[in-house]
Image (cartoon, rainbow, N blue to C red; front, side):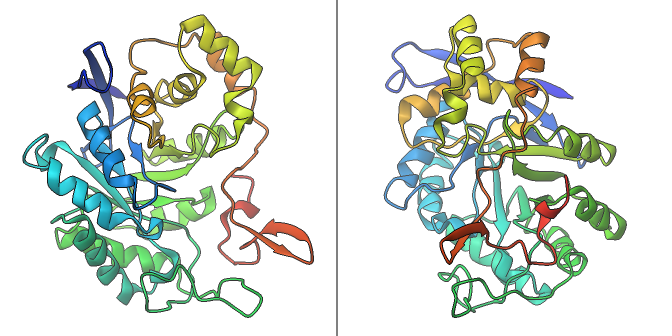
Length: 338
């Protein structure tokens, strides 16, 4: 269910030719409109993220994806403060953030959300996600990503995801967030949340691109009217997707960049995506995907590239061997097929 309706001007000082971008959105199961292309802030350093967010808003982005663990929400908040009331109204923006693994204890959920709101200088979030289904021990310090064992592995905690979800629901009831959702949850974990939820999740944010098309998970989510958000749509720094011959060929056929084709791969299927860049020209280009359509044959060809390759699983090296850092966690989501 893709809906048009919002038009934004790209400033001519960013792109020489003034261009009107038609931003489309999907409707969430609570009625909110969710812009199909958002601006990702993962791995954007404190010295560059504020300017990148400012450029993104000037370029027409209205969906900004954040997380406490990215350690840059204060700088994003500075950019939002400058733009809200001048370039945009608060209600025109859709701001997402995420509860980190160390705050799964139900009593820690509210303080974590309040910390994010304070850093972002906002009164409410449009969407708040459980970042991962895995609970870690709380180091009682927001600047520490996780407490570690002597070998460097995270110290895990045991808080059922159902209990964490009930605490998330209280944030909606308190008016601190408009909607709540999931991130990196597999189908079985989604089922558990749906079985206990009074307030339904609206989104599950997962890694997705043609090498990991997530078609089985997407079909499962549609049963519950959940929208998929795809992170790392360009391959998270790996050149293997951007330089793939199939992607290059389709890009040339449409006179578009490979990145624009990879973003269109999602938006045309109603999947929200959150590409990240700190380069003004690329920030603009990543949003310029609503003026062309992939053919059904092109979509089918891109879907056929699937090999279940993940770029974004935290790794741990021990005795010279790398493996998934958290594969021993009872809630590690990738032990299941999807």
